Amino acid sequence: MVRRVYLLALVWLAFCSQIPAQEQGIAIALGSVQAVPGGEFSIPLTLKASPEEQLGLLVIELNLPDILSLVEVKGGPAAEVAKADIKKDSTEVKDKPGSAVKISIEAERPIPSGIFASLTFKLSDDADIKEMELEPKVRAWTLDKKPVDGVRVGNGRIEVIPPLISCFFYMH
Image (cartoon, rainbow, N blue to C red):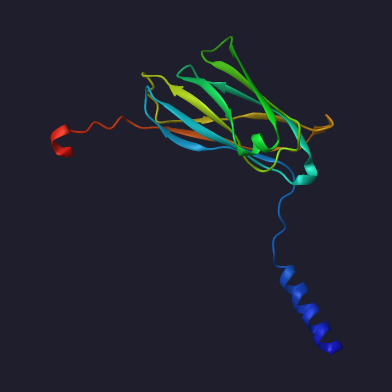
């Protein structure tokens, strides 16, 4: 009986050593979407964090080109669970066209993993590019206001597609 337990323990250890370790820390990512010139669209902002992180404050900064404007920031399910207060602030960028957007999310409880915000943008009617990338800069603090280092950030991507024009007679 002892040999079987020992053998099972060795097999279990061999199996577990093959499982890759999950990356620790905090990761934030903007989604990828398709947009039509002149239209509005939403991009989810997702968070991956372990409960031990006790994440309480996030500040996300985005530099937007002049053909893109931030219309609204809505809290997602993760922000609701954390009882988070979301604020946005936009300023004109000197030296080049566009604007700088700062979004701050301050929570009463630890922010859990998941979609914590949805960013709604408006794309200009005269957008003549095929795609653009949004590169957020993120700073994070714990609930007790200690800075968190090593936040991994995933860029967002917007693919600009031409509007679909359909023929009324063909649709019937």
